[in-house]
Image 1 (cartoon, rainbow, N blue to C red):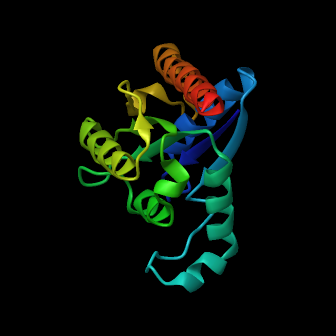
Image 2 (cartoon, rainbow, N blue to C red):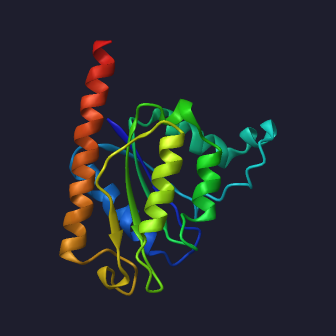
Length: 182
């Protein structure tokens, strides 16, 4: 089984990356092959709908990982009551052929005294729009859940991310088994 973990923050110092890295670690402990894509490191060009952008090496990597993936763990910061523009840009390069009938888990890093729920709702809407099976559970991490290096250290926060990863793995196994039957 392959799960694509997407770290959706464009910033160098990112709590979102801390969630994504922890989720990737947990999934690897569950013997899941992780395809890790970080929009802050794997910089994409601006999506314009132009077919030539598909020739970009980073776009190819993104699309290749998404095609291989059986499921997705997607993280984002909350920017102005939505997901990050960098994450939305990455998702715009993808579509139903990458996400259709594949489970997704979502988690957000809140900041600036805001709760993160709007980014989760925004992310859920976009993923449903590209036909992903977004699991009902979701998670918002607060700044206090991280150390100074943006590592997710709070035990309750780690438990919540582990629960999400477990639910994602279980649903992905069920969906994959059903696809194999048909």
